[in-house]
Image (tube, rainbow, N blue to C red; front, top):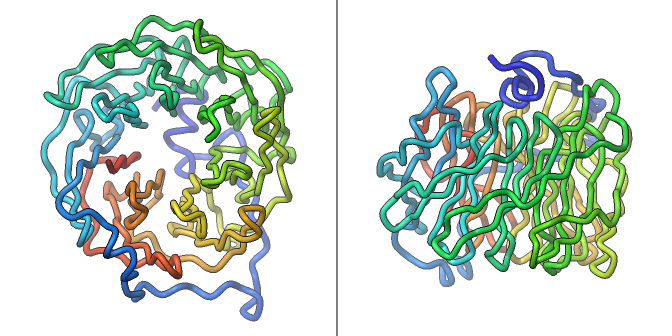
Length: 394
């Protein structure tokens, strides 16, 4: 086990973290959302649009955990059935707990979630590891590629900082061009310091946003695209002790949805493309009742009509209707995730399948997504993958 932020990120829910989850009151039977079924038929329109045949699927893990993997798992999935087939491992990558792909689809990037954090590039055509670069911090847990393809961003959970690396023509990474530490505001209740959990570019491409669990803040930066440096332009505070983990944008780019890990809530956020400002709305229920639960991540369907939340502890997926052109989430219910501790979820590019990486059960569950109703139907038995913490379908 590791100390400090690394320990909490990897074992939250197993051991008490620096801040305990605050459970919401249980709903009574009359007011509680009904559990959704798993028998919904696939949407005819989705069936007509879905490309057939196998597609690549990459799987992140902890190589240093007991029973963990040996690198990045390689698999494929059938777009018709959702069936996953294993195809080996890209070895030589330490603790690749989060993955992203370059916009041109040729290079895969992984964080190395260790005390001396790094990011690694892999050429997908021959699975050649192109090398690693230091993130300048501890326990990097998230990374993303700028839409222009020239810059890679990463978030260091352990030290509460975000880093920028240039992307070379080959897809390999250059030396870090910037490192920004979240020194203000002061840590939230129960937190020992900043804990950057995500860094992502806004849909309009104008700003880079970083979510920090430790300071209860979403930071907005402007990227200098010639130098690869970040300049802060605004901060948005959540309510104290929320512990924001990840922000997911609605397709139209005017609203985003925030998963709050510590107080077991979600929030709708308004985004102003002109200024980069985020306005955090009221906390909303995850539908998981009074038990301990750690929300992990929200995803939104490509048509912008539905959103899903992974619930670690409750071991479910919450389904929301997206209303008022993205300005409102309405909880519809939950469905069992068919695994233990869903650390991360992802939609296939066409939105027809949802993948859930279940850390404690070492499985990846696959669900069919009904285009019209947003209902989820489990697509067969979950796929076995050692300490699965990230699924990246292409």
